[in-house]
Image 1: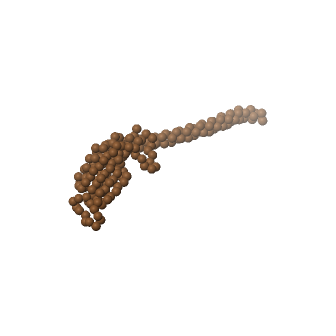
Image 2: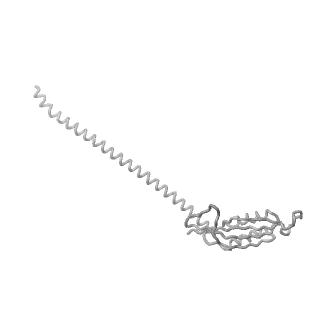
Image 3: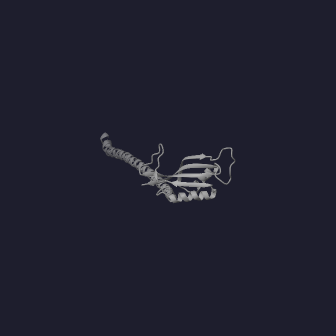
Length: 198
């Protein structure tokens, strides 16, 4: 009876063993496939993030470039960048004086020179120059000086700096102020700044 049972059971047991082996191989292959797919997914996610970061940086760079291009265009149109605009500086000074009607105003615009300040170092390829202007003015009172400088600042977009200003009173302190002639004399040295970007 044992021989008969073994004869009938041998085939199903072999089939079961083969099935278990095939199932194990399939499970192992499935795990390997899943692991490979997870690795590919992680690589794809890393690549996507890297591409997204590059894209974001590129968009930011384009936005900055547009802003800088716009600012550069404005600076170029106002004369801060490019050739010096001596005539516009003089016209602006005279237009401001027409409003203020200072008793006297004379100026000397000297040749352009390198702009230098302690600790100021322009970047390579950028040359900053300045054109010194000496102003001699007769003022009715001190406020005229500030009104002239503010009028200049508002009437022209060019950048200028004030190196020095001195105010003297030609008449004695105890004399009364005259409303028709200069009560104060002032000497100022301005610098009109021009940037040359190579």
